[in-house]
Image (cartoon, rainbow, N blue to C red; front, side, top):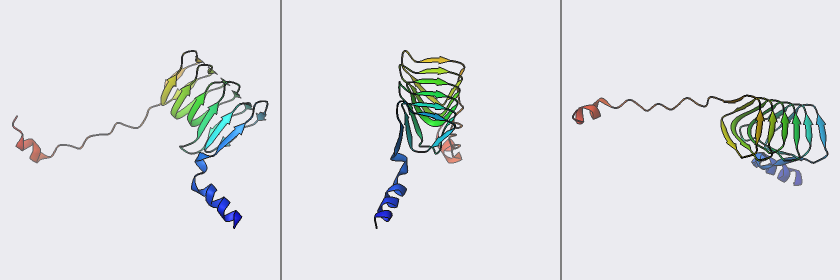
Length: 142
């Protein structure tokens, strides 16, 4: 009975769960996550967010030495490597990126630094309006 409740709770909305890597913790190797990841420590490897709702938060104490590929990110620490954010990126005042930055939507606070190329990823193609009906064209005098 307890196991069923626990699995039901996990199946309902695992995207609301947040993983925390504490200050002083060092991870050597690539890290994949879903949901939310808050990093106060250091990762020496790639950070890969799985799923469209994955959110990566790098605190002012956190460091990443490697690439970041996530849909959403809030960065306030130091990244040495390329950053690829497919949906939304927020650079807080103490953010420092030494590498290329690719984003779709960017919010950058005063004091944030990017030492590399910055480029916007192309979004979805603009939606086309349907062609006007022939009947409407006849009803309107030119």
